[in-house]
Length: 342
Length: 146
Image 1 (tube, helix red, strand yellow):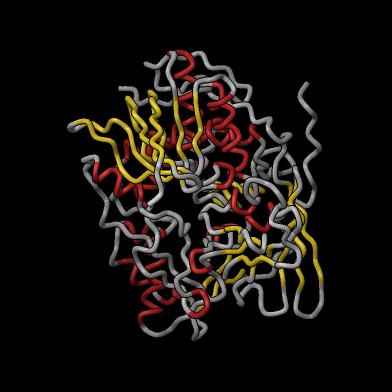
Image 2 (tube, rainbow over the protein chains, first blue to last red):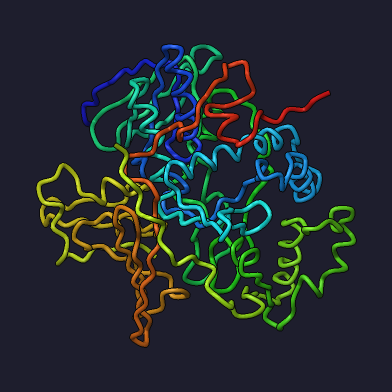
């Protein structure tokens, strides 16, 4: 057994995790910490530049309301979510996210994320609420803003390659966290006045539906080991929504998210018999009224129709555009070279 | 299917403290064999094919054996990432080669200013977040008015 050195770190706010949520929290917290003389500490088990579920980048932003353009209202978004989740939703939470999400997207763009624009300079929408991006470095850009926020004005510290194993409890109060370095023989004790757990979800709880060579291949990152769930349970948090599990429908020759395929490329799904479950199983939707009647059809009902096909042995389904694309939806023009700040 | 290291191309990042791939792998899979000074992926079943080790490798010594449905045997997809763009070279089984170039960012590296140039004029009692409402492009943050 190696002789571990114990390092004690005292901070005001402790942010556990280094993904998109943690980085966003760091940017927000750094501003208020600076004004109030507080210290913020972020702990990531990997390298913040490429950690979390956005480590490899993304091709779209899946929530943008567009309030400044007057195209949608907060109420429009709440109505959409309520219908999509068939009435089971916390409208207050949805509204709170909807009223703030646009400013986050605008900040992403200022930080350097390339968002597709049309000839008029407006965002290119994949769907009503989705924007297309060149997001290879999505996480790099957001991590950079978070690190700049914490490190440039002296309010914060960033620890990388430190794996948090549990909360530090002071009676019923979470007073920080403990963890160890995955690089050196160091054990960390973080003492904090407030602790934010943003260590990702839990992958590999259920077997993915991928088959053949893709067996076991997960949509979400295999490094999301359930740390947040364990941490918060140990800290005494009430666990809710544990009945919700997410196992996406698989299409033949496609493992990943199919949002762009359906929204951008106007794809349709075809089962092994050549049928279209969205057409053949339309009467099924009536059983789920009123939500079966709303447009767009709730995502879980669309997926359910596909699963009925699979359960009847009509799989696998393929997913392809109705007609060949007339032109590439990808802008081939590179953005103008950024001018260096002086 | 995982990333893999081509031993002939890997130089173990020479005398660096740790290799570039060790530094970046989100799942801490890349390790350096100190005897051969070659890096390797230690748990291929836990690899997400995120390509971060491929993109960061200074000697282009890492590739990904893609799933056969989109990278069938004999084909390859190889990224070359620069400070402002990424170039993908896609080789098809019939020998066709296509290259796709995309921007990765619009600002110089390191230049992401947390406030994005937006002014913040609010206090903690306000429903507005840092940079709001300026960054919303609205005069104020939405609230329910009774």
